[in-house]
Image (cartoon, rainbow, N blue to C red; front, top):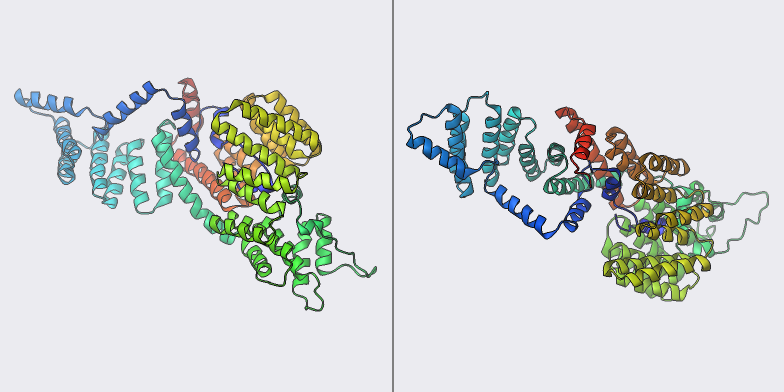
Length: 589
């Protein structure tokens, strides 16, 4: 996963993909993570291997059932010349070969006729042959886009050979064509398992199906989601990403009535300072709904309530509050600018990129000398992989706020990304020196230590990375994300699964709302074939995810684990046995 909008909330820069986590444990045993695997294998495969692969694909393309058609045809001709009477099985296979020839020549209706004859002629006790005949006929129906016939024939094929991967894969495509995505997922999962996760084409197809099912589930989840106030550590980190947020800089006088508790915005802002975040929304609502004569801080209350709604994931309510500020021409320009900035973050959370970028433009027009405008926009651009424009924005932010440690360290990370892309070693070394200087300049900034630790781990300098993580933990002992990073590094460094699991569980104890910890631990449990526990962990990750894309990803992982549970149960397959076989055969990466 790249940097998401969470970057502004909890900066996790050099995060490893779930496929990388899987590879540190052993042979990947999960779908939903295949893009990384496909790219990794292509990147590490030499030219000769590509030639062999290409040849293999071309050879497979000449036959839909794995037979060698020319040799079969030659045997048939010799038998005919000798006047040999064919057995029913041989005669059926002769019809199949005729069908295969028609299929290769694009004569799909004629191919179906020959497959019909093969099925009629073959004794039903010859299950392997019958499975092939039905699957081949399904292939012809697929070319004619007769999807119900494809499903019917693949199902018949599987009654004769319930572990026929090709029939599952073809039926999956038919289910996709008719928008039966859950059935499609089940069949493509069966394909991957029967192929022991060794076929990139199947894995990539499964990933695509998972993303679609995850997106459908996420859309429903976002409509019906139950608001969750994030952990104090999470909110604190989010607030630290701003340098001049009026909610944090404004001076609000205490209540003048000693015996009367503060009400409205005064109560809300007091709760905000004391980190009693559960109390903020009702107090702000009290201010907003009071009469004009009683309400002195209505616009500020809207900004604060909208911010808390944003952090809780109640985006409709958040947008309404920000809209009310933006639409108020009498509101202070600074308040309106921050309403634009925070609405831009909201738009990114719900995948409205153009609207988000437009809001940044509007904020800049109101406050062109405000560092937060450029810092927050830089993070969005980095999320969108617009790396050089992001760097320009970070540099503007730092010129306006040279002591903004978070902006500085994120600028260093952006330079690191560019150095990696260009493979420029001197630039990489320069970034490391800048991060070391950042620690000297901002010795109490957790992100400086965390970022340098992540870069060190990325460069395989694990001992140094651990030293920086230790220093970061001393500054922020309740920061669960630091533990998640260390757990992943433990897998990468030592392959110590038990230690990584212990660290991830500690992260969850520190912050029971840490989506990143649940998702990472779930990925580890999938690799250990503990699928039911993985599902529980992914469901927790869904509950605490903030952005739409985060929810999609967590649902995809959950759906993958559920599909594997159902398929292995139906087929009587032990995932641990597959793992053992893969390791023995040396297929682990």
